[in-house]
Length: 432
Image 1 (spheres, one colour):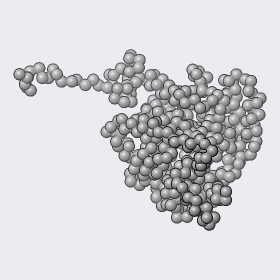
Image 2 (spheres, rainbow, N blue to C red):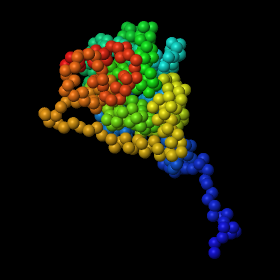
Image 3 (cartoon, rainbow, N blue to C red):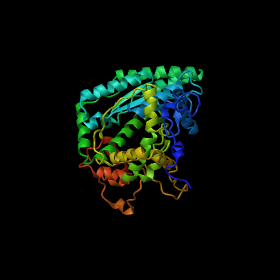
Image 4 (cartoon, rainbow, N blue to C red):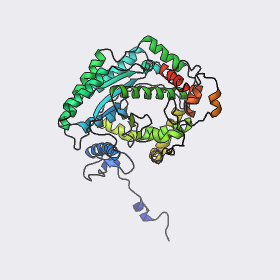
């Protein structure tokens, strides 16, 4: 009969192998230097190859970016967007196999005016970001959040005319030579715009107007939602005025998992497929793509650390905020803590988001047309009814907003301090 204290009991104990002695799961030869998941141990070379291939595979699987197309990279300076910029540089390099063939540009939104940073801190942060952007040799646009008050001002036709003339003149060149000439030409045009004052520098009046706008919002949840909307509007406005047809966002798998749950809590369930999917075509002429959505924040942190990808920390609205300060902050804390104890949390939420699709309206002449939300441009999930046509023609934004944006506006003490382009569009829709 077996006994607990038998002599050979010690021989049955499992001896754990130290992780530092594990071999790479890919090449089976080199010693692993990092472990992404429980069984995924990589050496330095294989991890770099794995990381680059993941980015290429995401773009190759979703073929919506075409050769010669202008793509705007939204770079906040954080780890994910900085890593995305690094992957684009790697894919467009002369030595890259199956190199990418689109024409990149970069945009950075300075949000310091919304979070109450001093001008000195903002200048220092912008200088750090600009040094990273300048090293890429791509045309870049640094836009301040205060410029939402001047979003109606259009860039002169000189930039678009110069781009069209350059494309017509060089369309017969070899693709590699064309892209190389395009980058240098567009960089010079971008710098000429800055020198000519077309970038509209911030003024104290614009900063005060922005601060009054965010001071009128009662909760941090509504402030973060409003900031996301204004940031999106500025990116789309820049893309349209500069002739970009695609916008690349640096949303990682971890960030999208948090966004999925927080958007459900905010009442944005109808637009989850567009908010977390690879492509978002709700804006029509400009399509948003998320090529970093397969990467976890852990993978991005490892890659940036091992291959010296520079990033810049810029404090935001929720910096140093408590976990229960906002719905977004609480969701982030919940997911991160759950991920610590259960490593499959983020990937499970992410895989769930991949199964979501936007319901297509019936394609017939009798079906009603679906209006879009004035703020986020998703299909309206509310109906005012026929009696609304008999109401006085006052500026009531509620009928033009989705459920979630209504909650954001409800948290504001005054609506008339919204950016002028939003109020003007509301008036235009009311008069239809």
